[in-house]
Length: 302
Image 1: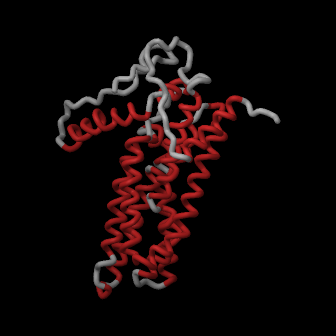
Image 2: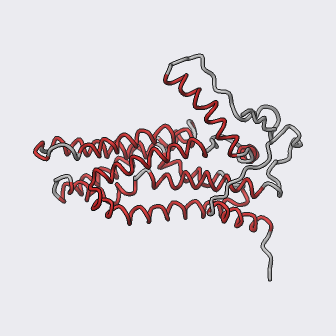
Image 3: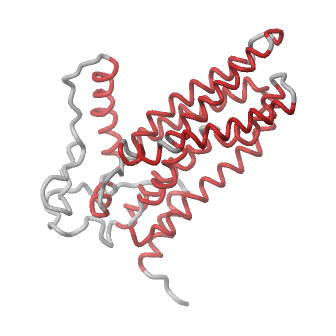
């Protein structure tokens, strides 16, 4: 019986472990790693893949958890449920797609300037509150006329704009660049499968959600999924902006538990001090030290 090459065998094993929920971290990186040698050699390639699978899977499933495809597929149905005619509902759906197109153009620059990971937690809370506002719309009495329908369209268009500025353009580049260069084809296939599988499940279940919970319950359900996706991204998705292949090896060789501790103990307190308490002197201590020669030696500080 022919044997798989080591790289392919480790890749397939890693995909099976992440499907079963087995996510492990590699050994802690220390300055003992010889300069010029990647820490993700044959002994840690499988561990590196586990976190890459987790990060890409989270970003891809968040694409469906945010509810963008549900709104795109069923926007006409939602507006008909809100009391407008089928013709006007189709025009609103056209406007929904146009907003997505226009708002995606600036993202061609922002995904590199601000980072893929940075855009995700910055836009998911806005997608959540726009869906919450859309849900609350259905509590307005029906005799308020077309003004309220305009509010419904505005909130849905804002939702589409925030999606096109963050999760929309960022999920596919992130889903491929987290993998080792030699395995990106297989890794991207896994990420796209996660995305398509999530889309099929949610799109098939949404009509039943509308029947069981009405539009208020449906939009409230996806509001909750947006909050959940935000938490997943915050805990399990590291930044990949402007990193070399060697630096990406180091980023995904740090244990997931160590990254989560850094996010909770360092990154979250910094955000509260800087953007809630407005302490301008607050400084964010970096998790990785890429100073010096490349490839760098990762100084894990969390």
